[in-house]
Image (cartoon, rainbow, N blue to C red; front, side, top):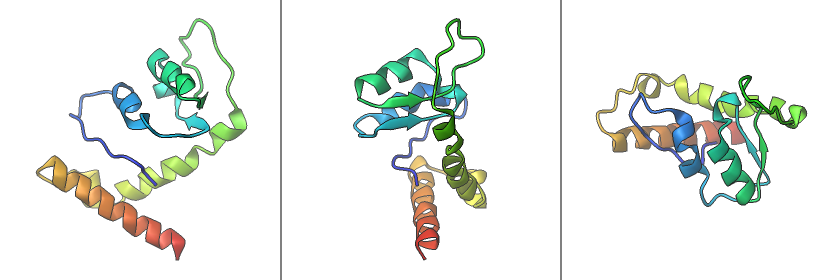
Length: 118
């Protein structure tokens, strides 16, 4: 389940906000897809004591290794976002304000969590 939700303008790249989302979170690994392979994210993860499990972009001059088995478990994260997007109000952003959108996402996450726990 999501730990933090951050609303930005639609044209802002996700990787630009990733460091803000993982600040203050203690974890052993940072599991993300290829789009988050930036020097800023990698250096922050290492400085925070996390092992980055992010496949390198194809255009990186030096390809680095990553745990491919652990990376395959990323589909669990994607499943959570898929469940959120199934709700029409979130998928189409019906909420007029950011606060209302975040509230809807939190409510939906709680409903998903309750379903999983049952």
